Image 1 (cartoon, rainbow, N blue to C red):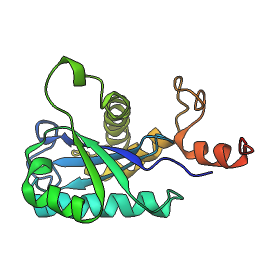
Image 2: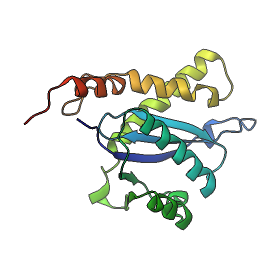
Image 3: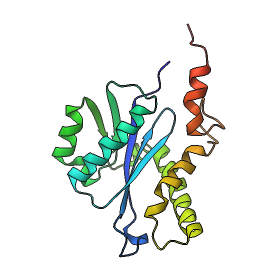
Image 4: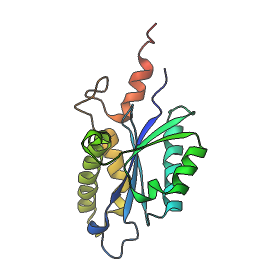
Length: 178
């Protein structure tokens, strides 16, 4: 059995919650739609080359985490860096299908799974920041992502009650249907 190769991509803007001295102002988040595992990294800017480098790093992490190689599909919002020709062209050159969430009611829930994970991520991020006694949140990014991936999900067909870190193991243990 193979996991899905569909991902959701978004950028969290943390500029208003970051002190002026903090270099990292954004967090790119990539989520595997099948396992709901979250990958993320802090960014200093939203320039296209920075976004592309971060995306390739996160996709590389996802691919090394037992997600199969081959064509992928990425759903994302209309963030200007994501819709830039250089970003889209680079993804298409990697044989990645791009689906941009268009404004409007019919697309409102297209990134709901990632939006939910992002809300959990932000709560965990600020909790870890407070516990560490840090002024900024940049040192808590990895801990917050790890928290999201450990937290059991109370929803989802086939994933109910399981944490994203456990989904692939459970899926691999199930016999294939004929």
